[in-house]
View 1 (tube, rainbow, N blue to C red):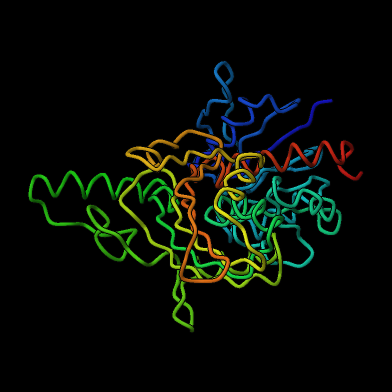
View 2: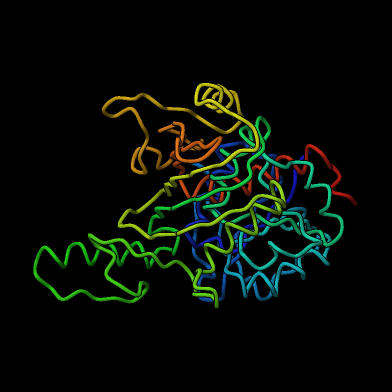
Amino acid sequence: MGYKVAVVGATGNVGRELLSILAEREFPVSEVVALASHRSVGREISFGEDEIVTVQNLETYDFKGTDIVLSSPGASVSAKYSPIAAAAGAVVIDNTSHFRMDPDVPLVVPEVNPEAIDGFTKRRIIANPNCSTIQMVVALKPLHDLATIKRVVVATYQSTSGSGKEAMDELFNQTRGIFVNEPVQKEKFTKQIAFNCIPHIDKFMNDGSTKEEWKMTVETRKILDKDIELTATCVRIPCFVSHAEAINMEFAKPLSDKEARQALKQAPGLVVVDHRADEGYVTPVECAGEDPVYVSRIRKDPTVENGLNIWVVADNLRKGAALNTVQIAEALIKRHPDLGR
């Protein structure tokens, strides 16, 4: 059985990755439609190695007859067009922040809460979580099942691709400019990103947190467990692709680092690379272009009762966005091949 799939925001970083992953994983498509704003109409984009699709105008597209919409155009655009697509009969898997905390919209990481997909019938929309949340909860899930996580303290080290192509260009241009003694030009970032770290992702909130930090807290509770306490510090680093996270956990029950390592090795979507030696861990550069979430530096935290530290790295454009979106679509058609019609 083939499905007509529309990719909204097809010309962006995540949109192009969605098309690539659909082809790589041989998702059962009968037709693929690439949609973007009127500025991109007529552009040609690759779908796999042998097929080219021409971008159509999102603003005038008729979603009738479309089975699945993979949407990554930005929150305000998705707020307008995702309900239009759903009303036309499609199931929308939305990669923006707009629907994530809507109580009638499932927020899904397939390795963690696939059963939540069944709630799509309320609005015919499924939300894809924030990139930093996705890789974290994939690693937390097997440990939570073993010993129940009470509290998480996480510091993220997030690549510039999380802010889009223009942010990646800014890192490149600033780096090149510094070497030839040009003044630093800031556009996407509030401070210089080249050779620097910026503890500021998304807008500041009244309590001093940024919205990115708030997202990690509320999304983790919705996906994994409403009783988990979580505090985050989210940092942008001068890296093009992949996010890293230093995660400290406190458990309700004792959990040794050996038990944790074994559980993580057996969990879906995870690869453990944890050797207590030079190069015995994974960094952002090494996991770019890879599908799994990598876990390293597994060790006890002796300063709290039942404490554990881990280092988690993943490609934010793949598992943190496009891959998770496609995996939701795969789980959707497995659980509901008729898409609830």
